[in-house]
Image (cartoon, rainbow, N blue to C red):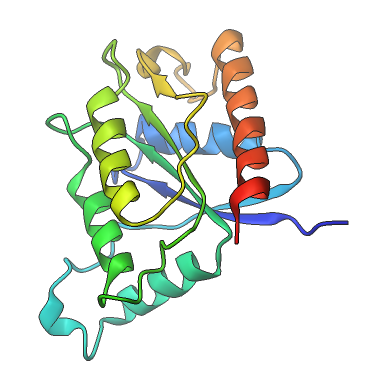
Amino acid sequence: MARSASVSVLVGSLRGNSINGMMAKVLMSLSPPSMKLDIVEIGQLPLYNQDLDPNPPAQWTSFRQRIKSADAVLFVTPEYNRSVPAALKNALDVGSRPYGSSVWDRKPGAIVSCSPSAIGAFGANHHLRQSLVFLNVPILQQPEAYIGHADKLFDERGEFVNDGTRKFLGQFMEAFASWVERTRP
Protein backbone atom coordinates (compact mmCIF):
# COMPACT_ATOMS: atom_id res chain seq x y z
CA MET A 1 0.00 0.00 0.00
CA ALA A 2 1.39 3.41 -1.00
CA ARG A 3 1.97 5.92 1.75
CA SER A 4 -0.19 9.02 1.97
CA ALA A 5 1.12 12.05 0.12
CA SER A 6 1.93 14.91 2.46
CA VAL A 7 0.66 18.22 1.09
CA SER A 8 1.64 21.65 2.35
CA VAL A 9 -1.21 24.13 2.05
CA LEU A 10 -0.25 27.79 1.64
CA VAL A 11 -3.00 30.37 2.16
CA GLY A 12 -2.31 33.73 0.53
CA SER A 13 -4.51 35.74 2.88
CA LEU A 14 -3.20 36.53 6.35
CA ARG A 15 -6.52 37.80 7.73
CA GLY A 16 -7.79 35.76 10.66
CA ASN A 17 -11.27 35.16 9.27
CA SER A 18 -10.31 35.06 5.60
CA ILE A 19 -12.47 33.41 2.96
CA ASN A 20 -9.35 31.71 1.62
CA GLY A 21 -8.46 30.32 5.03
CA MET A 22 -11.98 28.92 5.35
CA MET A 23 -11.74 27.55 1.79
CA ALA A 24 -8.44 25.82 2.63
CA LYS A 25 -10.19 24.01 5.49
CA VAL A 26 -13.02 22.95 3.18
CA LEU A 27 -10.50 21.60 0.67
CA MET A 28 -8.71 19.72 3.44
CA SER A 29 -12.00 18.16 4.55
CA LEU A 30 -12.73 17.03 0.97
CA SER A 31 -9.29 15.54 0.43
CA PRO A 32 -9.15 11.84 -0.39
CA PRO A 33 -7.50 9.55 2.19
CA SER A 34 -4.43 9.25 -0.04
CA MET A 35 -3.38 12.77 0.99
CA LYS A 36 -2.50 14.34 4.33
CA LEU A 37 -2.80 18.13 4.21
CA ASP A 38 -1.32 20.65 6.64
CA ILE A 39 -1.46 24.43 6.51
CA VAL A 40 1.97 26.04 6.52
CA GLU A 41 1.79 29.58 7.88
CA ILE A 42 3.54 32.24 5.80
CA GLY A 43 2.74 35.47 7.67
CA GLN A 44 5.72 35.20 10.02
CA LEU A 45 8.33 34.95 7.25
CA PRO A 46 10.69 37.94 7.18
CA LEU A 47 10.88 39.52 3.73
CA TYR A 48 13.39 37.78 1.52
CA ASN A 49 16.76 39.57 1.46
CA GLN A 50 19.73 37.86 -0.20
CA ASP A 51 22.07 39.45 2.36
CA LEU A 52 20.57 37.09 4.95
CA ASP A 53 21.31 33.88 3.00
CA PRO A 54 24.59 33.09 4.81
CA ASN A 55 22.78 33.16 8.17
CA PRO A 56 19.05 32.77 7.39
CA PRO A 57 16.35 33.64 9.92
CA ALA A 58 14.98 30.63 11.80
CA GLN A 59 11.56 31.18 10.20
CA TRP A 60 13.07 30.75 6.74
CA THR A 61 14.87 27.57 7.73
CA SER A 62 11.76 26.05 9.30
CA PHE A 63 9.58 27.01 6.33
CA ARG A 64 12.07 25.59 3.83
CA GLN A 65 12.28 22.31 5.75
CA ARG A 66 8.48 21.94 5.89
CA ILE A 67 8.06 22.56 2.17
CA LYS A 68 11.02 20.37 1.24
CA SER A 69 9.64 17.45 3.27
CA ALA A 70 6.18 17.71 1.64
CA ASP A 71 5.28 15.67 -1.41
CA ALA A 72 3.15 18.42 -2.93
CA VAL A 73 1.79 21.93 -2.40
CA LEU A 74 -1.69 23.40 -2.60
CA PHE A 75 -2.02 27.17 -2.94
CA VAL A 76 -5.27 28.85 -1.87
CA THR A 77 -5.16 32.53 -2.67
CA PRO A 78 -7.12 35.73 -3.07
CA GLU A 79 -6.24 38.37 -5.63
CA TYR A 80 -4.65 41.66 -4.63
CA ASN A 81 -4.34 44.23 -7.44
CA ARG A 82 -4.60 41.53 -10.16
CA SER A 83 -1.78 39.52 -8.63
CA VAL A 84 -0.85 37.36 -5.65
CA PRO A 85 -0.66 38.78 -2.13
CA ALA A 86 2.80 39.94 -1.05
CA ALA A 87 3.04 37.30 1.69
CA LEU A 88 2.57 34.50 -0.82
CA LYS A 89 5.12 35.95 -3.25
CA ASN A 90 7.56 36.31 -0.35
CA ALA A 91 7.03 32.63 0.56
CA LEU A 92 7.86 31.65 -3.02
CA ASP A 93 11.03 33.75 -2.88
CA VAL A 94 12.13 32.41 0.52
CA GLY A 95 11.63 28.83 -0.67
CA SER A 96 13.47 29.38 -3.94
CA ARG A 97 16.72 30.63 -2.41
CA PRO A 98 19.62 30.50 -2.10
CA TYR A 99 19.97 29.99 -5.83
CA GLY A 100 20.25 26.30 -6.69
CA SER A 101 18.56 25.16 -3.45
CA SER A 102 14.89 25.70 -4.26
CA VAL A 103 12.48 23.62 -2.17
CA TRP A 104 9.87 23.96 -4.93
CA ASP A 105 11.73 22.05 -7.65
CA ARG A 106 9.57 19.26 -9.18
CA LYS A 107 7.04 19.41 -6.31
CA PRO A 108 3.52 18.85 -7.75
CA GLY A 109 1.09 21.65 -7.04
CA ALA A 110 -2.40 23.00 -7.52
CA ILE A 111 -4.02 26.41 -7.19
CA VAL A 112 -7.44 27.38 -5.92
CA SER A 113 -8.15 31.09 -6.11
CA CYS A 114 -11.24 32.59 -4.50
CA SER A 115 -12.71 36.01 -4.23
CA PRO A 116 -16.00 37.78 -3.53
CA SER A 117 -15.74 39.05 -7.12
CA ALA A 118 -17.27 37.24 -10.09
CA ILE A 119 -13.95 36.29 -11.70
CA GLY A 120 -12.68 34.29 -8.72
CA ALA A 121 -9.20 35.83 -8.48
CA PHE A 122 -8.33 34.80 -12.04
CA GLY A 123 -5.42 37.30 -12.16
CA ALA A 124 -3.79 35.93 -9.01
CA ASN A 125 -4.22 32.36 -10.22
CA HIS A 126 -2.41 33.08 -13.47
CA HIS A 127 0.33 35.24 -11.96
CA LEU A 128 1.03 32.44 -9.50
CA ARG A 129 1.16 29.93 -12.38
CA GLN A 130 3.83 32.08 -14.08
CA SER A 131 6.06 32.00 -11.01
CA LEU A 132 5.51 28.28 -10.48
CA VAL A 133 6.52 27.49 -14.07
CA PHE A 134 9.87 29.18 -13.42
CA LEU A 135 10.21 27.33 -10.10
CA ASN A 136 9.65 24.00 -11.90
CA VAL A 137 6.47 23.16 -10.00
CA PRO A 138 4.28 20.92 -12.17
CA ILE A 139 0.83 22.48 -11.71
CA LEU A 140 -2.47 20.66 -12.12
CA GLN A 141 -3.93 22.12 -15.32
CA GLN A 142 -7.48 20.77 -15.20
CA PRO A 143 -9.81 21.29 -13.56
CA GLU A 144 -9.07 24.95 -12.99
CA ALA A 145 -10.45 26.43 -9.77
CA TYR A 146 -11.48 30.08 -9.82
CA ILE A 147 -14.09 30.38 -7.08
CA GLY A 148 -16.13 33.55 -7.57
CA HIS A 149 -18.63 35.00 -5.10
CA ALA A 150 -16.81 32.98 -2.43
CA ASP A 151 -18.24 35.17 0.34
CA LYS A 152 -21.67 33.68 -0.45
CA LEU A 153 -20.45 30.09 0.03
CA PHE A 154 -20.28 30.33 3.83
CA ASP A 155 -23.01 31.08 6.36
CA GLU A 156 -22.66 33.45 9.33
CA ARG A 157 -21.02 30.66 11.36
CA GLY A 158 -18.41 30.04 8.66
CA GLU A 159 -20.01 26.77 7.53
CA PHE A 160 -19.76 25.89 3.83
CA VAL A 161 -23.28 25.91 2.37
CA ASN A 162 -23.07 25.38 -1.41
CA ASP A 163 -23.51 21.75 -2.47
CA GLY A 164 -22.68 22.37 -6.14
CA THR A 165 -19.38 24.02 -5.28
CA ARG A 166 -18.67 21.33 -2.67
CA LYS A 167 -19.10 18.67 -5.38
CA PHE A 168 -16.77 20.56 -7.73
CA LEU A 169 -14.15 21.02 -5.00
CA GLY A 170 -14.33 17.31 -4.15
CA GLN A 171 -13.69 16.49 -7.81
CA PHE A 172 -10.84 19.01 -7.84
CA MET A 173 -9.22 17.34 -4.83
CA GLU A 174 -9.58 13.90 -6.43
CA ALA A 175 -7.91 15.21 -9.59
CA PHE A 176 -5.16 16.79 -7.48
CA ALA A 177 -4.56 13.51 -5.62
CA SER A 178 -4.23 11.69 -8.93
CA TRP A 179 -1.90 14.42 -10.22
CA VAL A 180 0.32 14.16 -7.15
CA GLU A 181 0.52 10.38 -7.47
CA ARG A 182 1.54 10.64 -11.15
CA THR A 183 4.04 13.48 -10.83
CA ARG A 184 5.71 13.40 -7.42
CA PRO A 185 9.39 12.48 -7.63
